[in-house]
View 1 (spheres, rainbow, N blue to C red):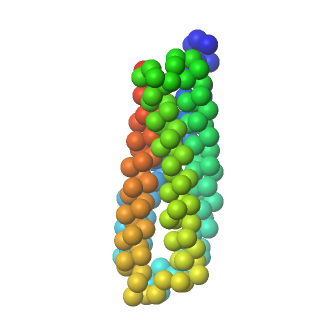
View 2 (view 1 turned 60 degrees about the horizontal axis):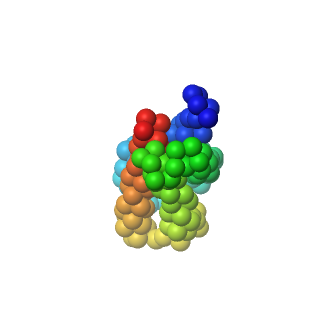
Length: 156
């Protein structure tokens, strides 16, 4: 494969990871600090409205980026070899992209459900939001790293 066809899947992976990374970074820099300033009663009053909106926004991005990265890695590995610089970048991006689903299932699913159920007391909320923010920051770093590797796949 030559020309544009050789880069279609890597380009789609980079676009998906870039959109997801940008959205996660915006949430990290704008929404998370705001949520942490809210009194517990305000947070719990707003969460039923904003939680589902954020879920509907992030779900397609989170679901689309990992498979696109995996398909790009397969395409690149078949084209240039998995141990080439391009292949290693594509594989790294795919692994990191897939780890985003693991991070969601391992932490965010239960944490978000606890907020929905009000299973976190007002006294525990600041610590719970700090934990949520730390995990979210890790998710941002992982996604930005995957995006960077996907860009490396395009230029390697």
